Image 1 (cartoon, one colour):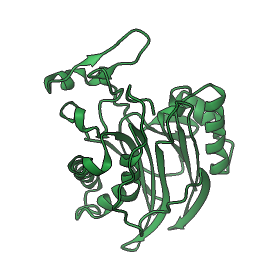
Image 2 (cartoon, rainbow, N blue to C red; image 1 turned 45 degrees about the vertical axis):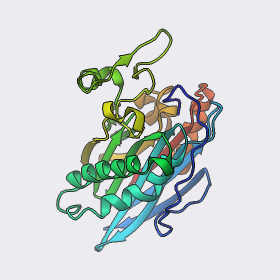
Image 3 (cartoon, one colour; image 1 turned 90 degrees about the horizontal axis):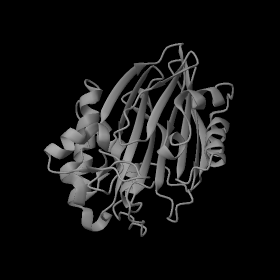
Length: 290
């Protein structure tokens, strides 16, 4: 991710790991599936390191858990900047924090918002270990193949195909659209020729985890959406901005709607983004329903 002007020096990996949480495989491609309540959920992912002169800063989650008699599909893409420690920490902990919220089953939206906030607070309080960087996030929770909860901060995006029509579920948190809030909090937004708008001339998104030096002017409050999964919902694409910088939502849906294997679909999208000269890290998860 080229969110910050400074080049990444390669962040320190956070030392405290919950080893029971997620598969820590370094594989950049894979797939899986789960069946619950007669509703099949299948996913595939593909991640490609960019050509921006820094180490890979993207992380993903794609797994299923049984909890309280329910089957949860947990999917996420974390797009880091100024090192990989913050997205690495999020990979191992954010979903745990969400599911540990006592009101998750009664009020998932509030639980997700609370967990995003508490996770960001922990990252800031442990910046000596995690470093000065940050990360965007897009997360999706599928409950029993019937309900979809999507949240995001930053510009990684979730796009659903509904009867072949692309619908963006997330909000791209750009500095220009949040200029008033940023300025009210004492910051400023720059727009230099040939560049994108940046918070304090540095960060190209208005919301992110971490980024201690800019936190007074950033938000970690996510946008949250709930989508009932019915017969009109075919699949959802989660991807970092390395894809969306070079591809429109409908283009992405049209490109993979006939590809039934979600791993092949994710790889098709990342390959096309590379062909279109995207230089950023490119991470993509495709989740198919039914």
